[in-house]
Image (cartoon, rainbow, N blue to C red):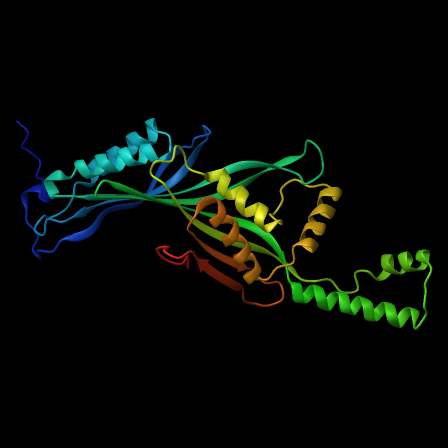
Length: 303
């Protein structure tokens, strides 16, 4: 007869009697099914609390198997997350667990149309982080996404305009009027004498999702941010789309302060309390410009 395998977590006591806030695993690879039917790869961190001071440890395989079953059967929404966390907590009733948590990092792949060219589109990947925590039968959900956009410096734009004005004045002197063809010809040759600096930029947005919500507002959060900024990075483009993008940048000059304020105003109006962090990856400087803001009552800044 085979002897019973030892179960150290169950049979031994901790040498130091202390409760632990969270115990679990991170970096678990799994697929998750989104509400639109898309299945995406994710990385999970999963844990329960360990309030029994003398318990040697939790049973991590129980958590893994619950997560694996969730990935195979469930759609990623608040109700399914609540059920999973409740099962995780119940699976460790023998350890006195009263809380459970899950973090998922994944990307939503979404097709975006070109700005003006009909029937032209390309795919964009939006990185998301979903944090779910069950405490005293209350589900706390936060959703975070990163948005890539273009930012053109208002100061650089003003300096470029002044340089163009100075060059025009130097060319034509004190004439009271200049014929339109001459002006158009001069602009065609010298209009790019100075150009404002632009750069790829990133916005990290965090919102709370109500446990009663039917689904996670993935696309709604993306759309709200991109509409507020006006200069989301593009995928497939033709020359007309590139020109439209240049026009959008010219109409949306912004410092990091401008971007952060725009985003907070738009996201708060649609989702309530939020946290915002923006980073402009400078083309002028060797360092980046950053700004952060959060609604009153938000648990913490995005750093």
